[in-house]
Length: 362
Image 1 (cartoon, rainbow, N blue to C red):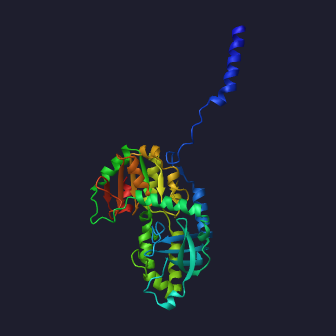
Image 2 (cartoon, helix red, strand yellow):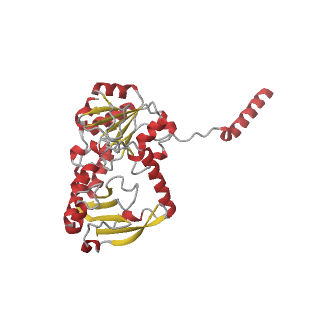
Image 3 (cartoon, rainbow, N blue to C red):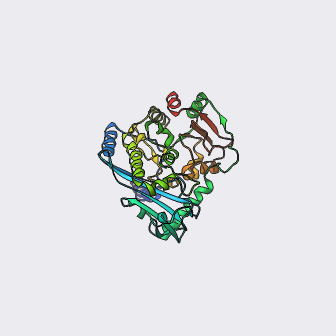
């Protein structure tokens, strides 16, 4: 009887202190969790929402937010779509510190001089705006927020795998579909997708969008600026057509193949795409536009990924690949694309070809 009382007392003390002794583990990193499937009901809801009302905002050319100097410019474009029709179309052309000398005096007078916060200082910004109010312009308010964003962008630029400044491209090793399939089968992989995956259904890549709008990374007064000043309605129609393509597009065979592969492999998909084609193909990707990837892309996670399969990605957005090689020198980077991307190095692998033909074969 006495032994039973002691046992009961000991058990009570253990239960009393158990909550205080239990180790609290951090929640599982989303990049290590199993990918989340999307139900047919959710897919229908996404399609209905896109048909009803949605909108997009772009800053072009890509990378223009990394630095603001007298030799750079920034273009902001966007519109809303409701019941398949574009409205509230707008675009803004921005020059920093001064206007190009090649602009006529009459065209210069169309620009408004404002002060824009950048790197914790007020930068003279000449801007020409057309159309509706740009709702995204007020996203960043305080100098502290701006400084934080600038430091983040500078870090990204330092780590970004972009060899475009080299006189010759590094030469990665070319591999076959069979070799790539074996790597995906035998290793812990993660998929990184870009706009090239959706190109075949009419959604333009950033490069194609620049081309269609006449935006140049090197010319201060490019065709976009000329059209914006001389024929703004023409630019507005192009913006409307580009944005409507997001509504009409449906997943490609490569989207469905990648969904099946990711769910089978328990592998996450990180995407820089703002379309909903991954969701409509049945899987929920990790979208960098909604959640900054550096929140979860830490050294512990990086070291656990044996290979990153890049599909339709033309550049290293958010410096994901640069950080990967920094913290996992033995990690494998494979690019599946028609053309060799700039981020590939000599120790990387390249599977050249049509994404739509390759992925269904895995």
